[in-house]
Image (cartoon, rainbow, N blue to C red; front, top):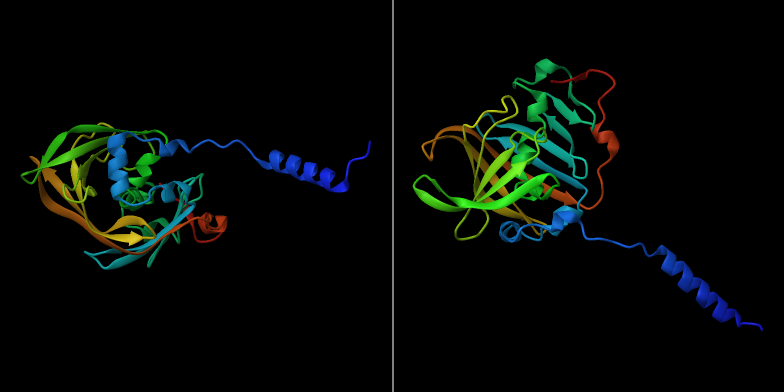
Length: 256
């Protein structure tokens, strides 16, 4: 018995198509507690962050007017920072600085390289595996009560292993974050505060234009510790070039 050529071709196409269909499962980062989803939803279509591969922005230290351009590979958190006096990178294995360690005046390059990325991309990065977010008791700050979420992060992945996220009562966005610096001392419990202001839309995701850091005492902000502003924010579906994160062969050292 002979089959028409058209029937054979149709069967082959159906077979080929079925072979190409791979079972897909939802990204586990999309499965978040309902209270956390409310905060994420206030920050735009956060599924775009889940699907993104690259991230970049320009940053200015308002107290010194020093500028930096940050580039981040989102799947593996590789980082490149270009500044006036130095370049810093994380190639996935080590943190490096160019042209030399003396070009950076801070205490630790390793601590600094993802510091502002961690702050600026809250709450999006709290969707990462290894992070637990749950509703907490309301917290008082500067005489005002805020609805609060508590985020616990696996140790060694950022400047802090715990954040308290204080929600703006009107917009539902992140208004303040309280945190302890545990990078240098895992037992440190002294809280600092960051204020997030003037949110701007970056292709459907909202990021603060200004972040201001304060010391915290008795549920009140005291000494201003930093203020940075942001512009040219891009969240990219395509990955950044791997060469961007590689340590230069000359005039660069592995940093602490």
